[in-house]
Length: 359
Ligand code: KG4
Ligand code: ZN
Image 1 (spheres, rainbow, N blue to C red):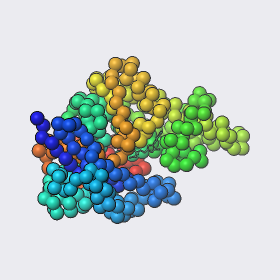
Image 2: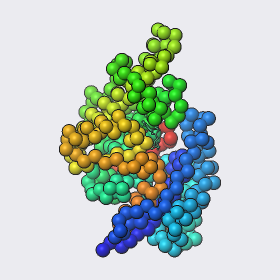
Image 3: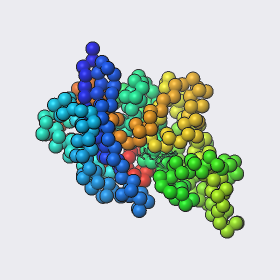
Image 4: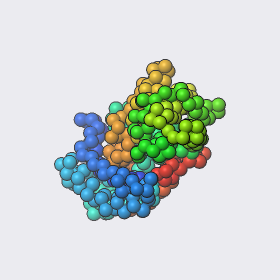
């Protein structure tokens, strides 16, 4: 029988301060307590995440999040087997705040410290939520990440492709901005798109003419801006219908690109399951397209609950448990890494994403 392992996880790589306690044992994989404190309101006036503000907020809130998660779990530090903390990639000030907290707790309690790659946290989540076995294909789509990963083990990731510029969430946010919709843009663009005609404006499907599963969303965003300007020049302004049609056209282009690139990723890595994570996985049109591709190709589709698709600490605790089971620990020399590709062998992507260098 597998030994029961209980870890505290800490996450602070972008704009969510989070802590969670996760247990893996004969009773299954359980999230015993989880807290996420977002920072949207702190950054709202700046149109994006301000790294210094984020770092300070993490440093101020992280102890409180840990205390709340431990209280929710009903456990003391003596009940834990270790402390897992995001050690990168992400905004360096935030990652440092988490790593310092993890080191302090490890030094005070004597518990082992486990540095976790944030992207591994996302990529291993379907094993926490659905008990998924290796291998599987993972599509990470958020405001800061966009990549296809073949996952063969807790530390065996192969990046098959990804966005060479903007992440899709970032493109949704920029489109919302140029159309006067509030942030975060994704849900608002999706709501408008539901009312619009996706065929009225012919927007490009970038990189479909190239083999492989790399994507690009920057040119699509510029094409949308030009189309908007053309409508304004012709009519003197945008009507509600124009705006809805622009959103529908943009979303349809993103959906087509993701659907086709997913088909290609599954052809490159023919596995039994596709899993998705990241805030953009909330988009119903994208989800439906991924489900259709999976049905066509006879592949199982897994989308963890949204609270575990977006940034959280349960995924960090879980990835820590996977490393713990392999006998891998860190010590107080653990350093924060702003860049930390999961797949060290693939060439680096060009894009950064608005939330910092994630890859
Ligand atoms: O994973 P997440 O919470 O944070 C990181 O980027 O790490 O993802 C947030 C991103 C934002 O860009 C947001 O606009 C996008 O996910 N998003 C959506 C939807 N809901 C959130 N994009 C498209 N459609 C949605 N329904
Ligand atoms: Zn993330």
